[in-house]
Length: 157
Image 1 (cartoon, one colour):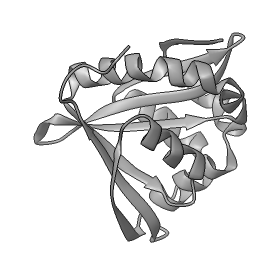
Image 2 (cartoon, helix red, strand yellow; image 1 turned 45 degrees about the horizontal axis):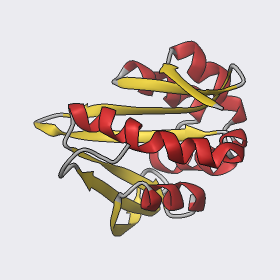
Image 3 (spheres, rainbow, N blue to C red; image 1 turned 180 degrees about the vertical axis):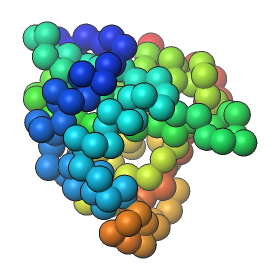
Image 4 (cartoon, rainbow, N blue to C red; image 1 turned 45 degrees about the vertical axis):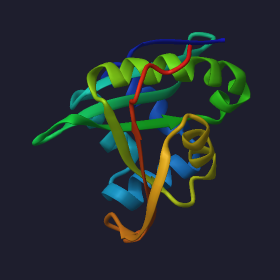
């Protein structure tokens, strides 16, 4: 069963070496930094939560404000392979998590590496719109997909 709590920098340090390879590659392609460097900074720059399975952090997610756009939150999530062994729990938690994020930001969005198939599938299932492919995003100038979700009304529990 997946449980959630506020994330700490220690969680970021602990989970970074166990992230899915596609998540690791996304960090490097977009930012030019490994998760070991970028993830603690992400935890410190916004609101973040840890998803635990059997007391061990298997995913981190967060949302950061965007300068000059008070209603837009930059949302992100990284996972280990273990979290996908608990798909039903993840899908059950998703509407509540989105409601929590939408309470702060009516518009959520970001970019996802076009190679990150599992996260693209989760984004679709969670109700995000895939807006466009950006062919040369990030420091590696790779294809990324811009996504967004506008809260029209509360998500179904």
